[in-house]
Length: 201
Image 1 (spheres, helix red, strand yellow):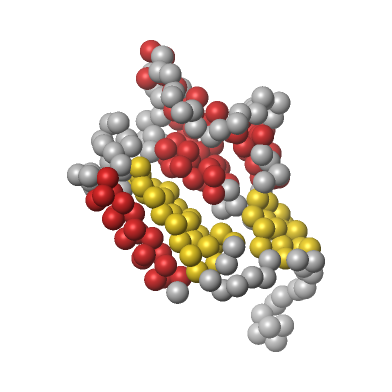
Image 2: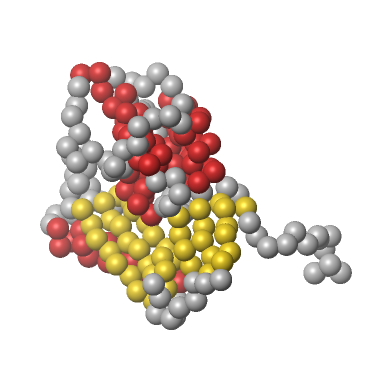
């Protein structure tokens, strides 16, 4: 490599693009704790009270929730940061997906949901992914939430792919068309997962 390119040896990987890599005797772990802390600082929620779930099960809607948010670029910046945080945090996928659907014209209620999501991140800053040697067994799990969006009645699909016991790939996204039944929504979700599995293989 040194003959072809101008390179230098930096030693073992420890921090790269906001991802902290820790090597230990039985593998390695990936964490974005420092990046998440910067995101909380940007949002002004460093000293906030942690939340136990990324989404409210039954969100209450007030008249001010439908008013346009006064800083849409700030909303987009925070949600973009949360998107990057999903690299090591699968549990944020659905909540971040829902926040992304309102990037064009966020309302006060959407920003309140993002703040709830950031409070959840505050409570689990140290979480991440761990990898160690294991069997080369490829497995996938998929699910869909039929007609979950109350505005356009489109379903949300999600999948996660494991190589051995370790998470390899995951996705949560809204389906492009309206499914007529929960079975149709499940088949669409399985088709996305199968395409991902074929690509990985």
